[in-house]
Length: 247
Ligand code: NDP
Image (tube, rainbow, N blue to C red; front, side, top):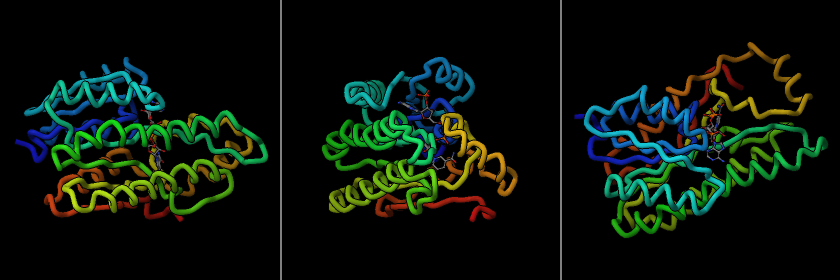
């Protein structure tokens, strides 16, 4: 029996990085895990790689920018496992750019995925959690949701937004048994920087390479597990985890 046996967690952005590592962690702890992302073949590979001794793994191709698909994801998880105990709103992208370079399409995508995707996740599970008076919604914010630096204006804006929304939700559901958590990672070695197209940002990245050792996705999966694996009356509202040599 794992600590999560009998619990069901839905994870968005589960096809790589932090979402994938969190899926593996919760599967090892015996949970039923529903993996969601757009790249179905990656989800299949991960499903075949991990196993949940007491629970099971399911995948659902989902684009978080679609309200309908997010609702279908929640409905699928409830049909498959009877309930959703935990939603980890983790899908995100980070095409950092200087505002003067007007990467407006990338601004749009960040707002759509990093903010609206999270809200659609909340909308898809909140009625279910209110009805059973239990549940936990976690969202991946960032240390960039606490501070802004040149090139992160829009990305930080999205991460500040979701952190504050989680805080607002926590206050609204304070009288219920629903818990909310923002996970704010520092630099983590994942595919996240692949979406950067701004040449100035990429060249700055190259210059600063090696100045810091990023965390592994597993370090963040541990933080998610810490927040979830508390007694029911304990609500960990925020976890900030960064490499100790990140300024
Ligand atoms: P990855 O690029 O490895 O993972 C991003 C995930 O988001 C992928 O699974 C991708 O799946 C999914 N995704 C992107 N767009 C969509 C969409 N429209 N619908 C559904 N899923 C989508 O990066 P990370 O693991 O690092 O990122 C996870 C979260 O952590 C993000 O919110 C990121 O902002 C945050 N974060 C990361 C940090 C880091 O240093 N790595 C630091 C702080 C925060 P697919 O393409 O298959 O849809």
